[in-house]
Length: 124
Image (cartoon, rainbow, N blue to C red):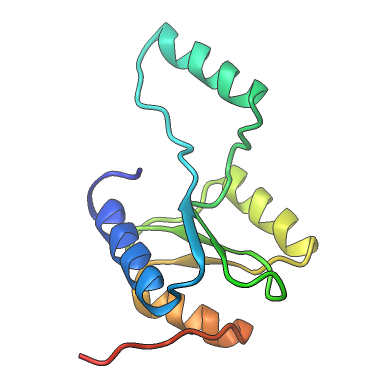
């Protein structure tokens, strides 16, 4: 998982999604590698052989099958997608999947509304 502010944002988004879309499956695909030196080259090679895609979005949300999956790239307030992330986002979009770069629960909410994907907002 991402470090610092981005990790906190992502955890908040996951908690919110699981609350407002209780039947959906929300998954974080671990893309980062926390090793140094030669060990990182070995782990990267193994990950790619096992199907890892560089630039894959942080979160995939699987609502009901008739809706299809949606993808979220979580970034800190000043963060931006890498070139590899942009390329994967563009490919997913060409394939017809919704993808959004989000920095808050409000961004996720706005994306779901824009895509016409229902959720049950909870009142405090």
